[in-house]
Image (cartoon, rainbow, N blue to C red; front, side, top):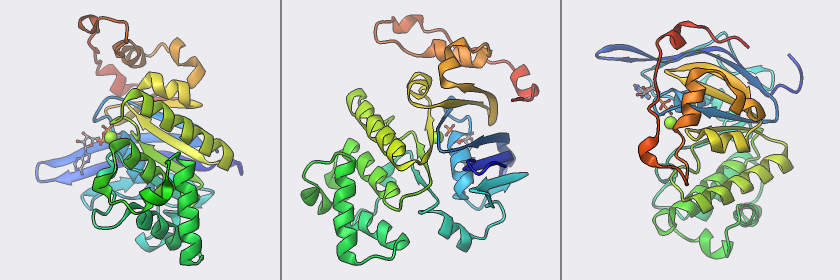
Length: 284
Ligand SMILES: Nc1ncnc2c1ncn2[C@@H]1O[C@H](COP(=O)(O)OP(=O)(O)O)[C@@H](O)[C@H]1O
Ligand SMILES: [Mg+2]
């Protein structure tokens, strides 16, 4: 495996066990990436979040994760203990969750939470952590960072909450950031602003990014490569620039389903699904 491979996943499977039997949420996922921007796209329920959380082993006890390999920077993380995983989360890999409001502690100021996230991973003084937190808030383009530092989570808007989460996940300087639909709750202008901030930070810091989204058009304009998921499986992996030439019927369906600003919503084609997609194994 080359030294430039950041993450290597081979045949990742996640099965949830429940009173009604097993549910196979992620099936034989394989991909590897360097310091790149990889998009994971698919309709709701296709297994994007479960894949992201499986990499960090942040799944409920009812989830069984198995794989031939989950390697991060050449280390096997599949067999790491929870204690060892705490060493990986932070400096190694962090994840911005789909709804950041549930990830922030409501009774602590946002600044303190970001500073604590830094202190947990770096051996620095409290004063240095505060200084760096203010810098990080500025890096995600929050104006008046001193004022925002002292706000409680309920006092910030959705867009600002997302930026705060991104600041909190970037401050330990992870080698890989997993961002799970970090912009989908935001309006288009704020969305594009946030993507520009992420793009800039990823390029300047030389990080890897896994960007999870259901918006194929957005992902293809932002990422280097796109993984397309359906029913827990990878349907295809496309270089972003080749996406529009894809011949896979599901990918074509996703492309055609995109609402266009100028289009007529009544004419959106319905996405036809084909069980044959589940039988054909993906090769790359
Ligand atoms: N904790 C859980 N227990 C049981 N099933 C789950 C759990 N979390 C997710 N799933 C199921 O796994 C599938 C994939 O979910 P998810 O990865 O969240 O999809 P998405 O692509 O929308 O992010 C869904 O069918 C979902 O219902
Ligand atoms: Mg999800």
